[in-house]
Image (cartoon, rainbow, N blue to C red; front, side, top):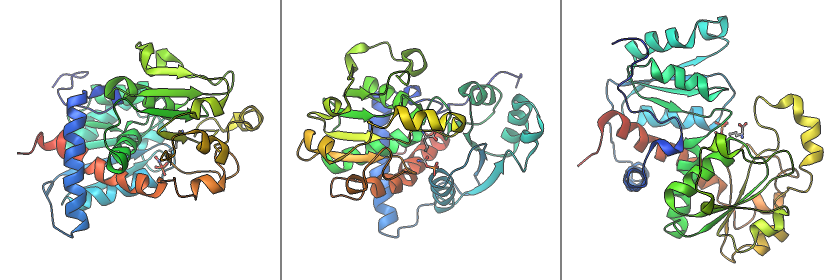
Length: 310
Ligand code: CP
Ligand code: NVA
């Protein structure tokens, strides 16, 4: 294959899949999760290998992909910047050409989206975004599945985003556009979602609010994330000041629907972006949300490697 040519289907942003593909993936996730809970063996990926490349820290993404791949009968190779030639400036294109000749699937967590795109363009095998500065599609896959599992269809519902206009916010916006719900967004000034980065031109799926309490009014789901994402640590002091009023508290949850859910991709900082009483309270589904990373990603890996089942 010529350099720069990739025939594989990748998952680099939420908008890489259509609504109909998400319907399929959520159905498969429910089946795969049920089998797992019933201790039924399901090993369709025997002899397949997943390479995971981490240029940033991770707990959930690492464990969910690695455990999920083993459960499906496959193997995993884990690379980090520090222990591979990636940290010694080997071009990402060369790394992609080599790694993708030896494995069947690649998951990457890195900084700029352009880097994962360059990798994918030179990869013989599917590439999955395990978080970049711009997007976190596997997390929103898990979050939407969790919503559906708890409350049914998300179409027509209101999701309130309180906090930073970051990778999670951009991905929620893409999901709102594709899956037909409304995103209420409240960020401090200077930390707004950049519509160009989110890549969503349909303004009807988003409403912005100066006051986070107003964003939560009538919401079916309230969600937030850390004030300082990985890679932005130098801005931490300024962010602590700017975000002080963007802490999801009991008053915000009370303004939402009576049966509203609270989600957080984790890791969380109690007393910063969320009150302990909210994340540890009855409306919080953060532990199911974290577990569901593994189930949705098993369905995603199955889809990318084997296509539709049945
Ligand atoms: N939510 C999430 O992606 O967690 P990790 O950073 O632990 O992988
Ligand atoms: N926005 C956070 C998400 C961590 C899972 C970050 O990028 O650090």
